[in-house]
Length: 358
Image 1: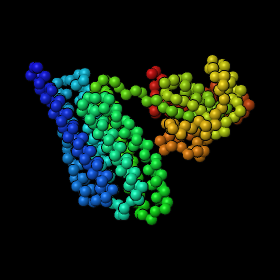
Image 2 (image 1 turned 90 degrees about the horizontal axis):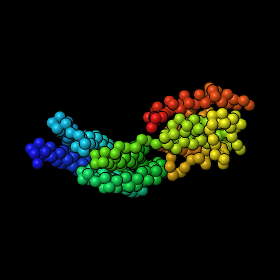
Image 3 (image 1 turned 135 degrees about the horizontal axis):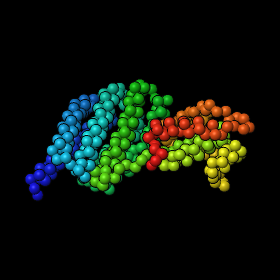
Image 4 (image 1 turned 135 degrees about the vertical axis):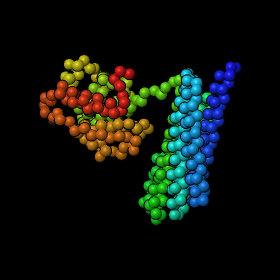
């Protein structure tokens, strides 16, 4: 091995070693922060707060090491991907460190013991999130994509606990005499545990990129257009979106109350445009279009407010478009309606970062 290669490998080992040390300290602080909440241990919370300063200093130092590595060796291929991944992991580690600080501050402010069910769920989410972060870090350090992917399972378990934990906390807020600040603090801890698991998923993706060079796939969205009856406007929006952005994701449409059939004006429009509707296609009711297992990323109300007609997941963004074109007459101007919808859809896709040339 040449002297150049020896120095390069030595610098890589130094970066990897420092990253491992940062990961261990972050996991240690996260575990102790949660323990401080569970035990109402203000002393432990204060000690953990101080330790976060070392994490911040270490992340700045590893950033400097990575920049020096690039300047010295002008790396390419796997070496460049590794250093790029370390820089991103450094940001993720600093964020998780900040989550630990916020959890410690909650521990310092809680005045009375939290309900046992809330404590149980905090411990459960902490366990899953910690395992997800540990698996992701171990996978990156070892360059093992399979090990890193294990973190996704733990992250999914963390996400599965969150809605249940939120309901438990809501019930406690209705019947428990404890100060509201204590319950809000518990809610913050739940959310930060979920964010920790999401950071683990990001680290998993960085491992795959560093080892294989595979980039993260373009985001695919589940979108639903909703109007009063799904007879024309929402269905036209769905068809326009699918035609212009076929790779955007899963696009659908529905009506608050499903009509018995599509409007003649829509069918005529489709014939002129050469758009074929499936033989069994029919208007869909909004309640039937919602999937309890997979939330929609975006729901667009066309002249209606979907938020008022069902309990939608917190992760769903609900928009309302009030269109200029009047479609209540017997012969609506479908071409003008289509152009207005396309203008709105292009704006939405630009906001989401969806391209029409993918």
